[in-house]
Image (cartoon, rainbow, N blue to C red):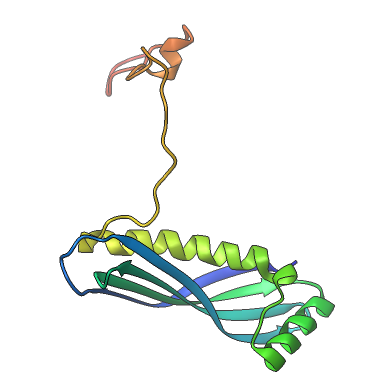
Length: 152
């Protein structure tokens, strides 16, 4: 299974087309090239896109992920790419998901100054009645929170 050693973004573009409300999103990740470096390493050049629909805005990121695996799997990856421009899912699923996760979070931060709605939402937190605002230490009967600058 392909494992990511490191990753960096090489380009980013945010374009706002209209001030209309976003109704949905379209997200995609494309592998543009694969290069073998050593027996057990390869790099994947990728392009991530996020479209705010209908025709509200778009975000594009490009980058490179440096990966490792067994020499046999790297050879299989590169040969498959050269023949069909495809990546074997059984080899690349974890790496593709890691690239997608990194690109999605980066796009989230890059789009905020443009006033675009978040395309990722954290899971909701639920609190039991009566727990709102109470520090965890006090609930357990432990130490009380100290005021800033106060003594022990």
